[in-house]
Length: 154
Image (tube, rainbow, N blue to C red; front, side, top):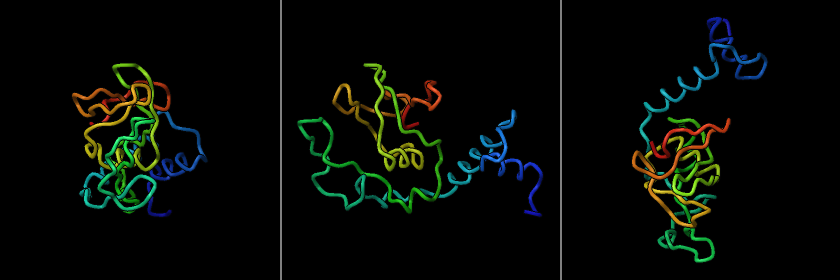
C-alpha cells in the first residue's frame, strides 16, 4: 500500500467498511472509476447462456402460460460479466404503466449492469407480460434507497 495516495487508501478503507462513508463520497467515486474502466472493455455478446446456467435453446422464448414468462432468459456468461459493470448493479424496476415493482435474478441484473442495451424488453410480474426497455421504454430502476432511477436499458 506504500504506492497509494492518501485518497486511495481512504477509498479502500471506506469500501472495506473500516471507515464510515466520507461526505465527498469516496466509495461512489471508486465505483464510477470502475464503471469507466469496464466500459473500455468491449462486451462480447456472443458469450451467452441461459439464466441459471446452461446453453441457449431454440425454444427459450416460448411463453409459459401459467406465468407469462419465457421458458428461459439469455444472460452474458459469468466470465463476460466479470469484466466489470458499466452501470450500477440493480435488481428491481418499476413498470410505469401499473406502478408495480419487479425483481430479477442476479445473473440478469449483472447482465444489465455489464451491458445496459443487451435486452430490448423485460417482464412485469403484475401485468404478466413483456414490455420495451430503453429511452422510450416502460420501466425505471428502483434504487436501493427507494428513489426512482433512470430508465431500464439506458
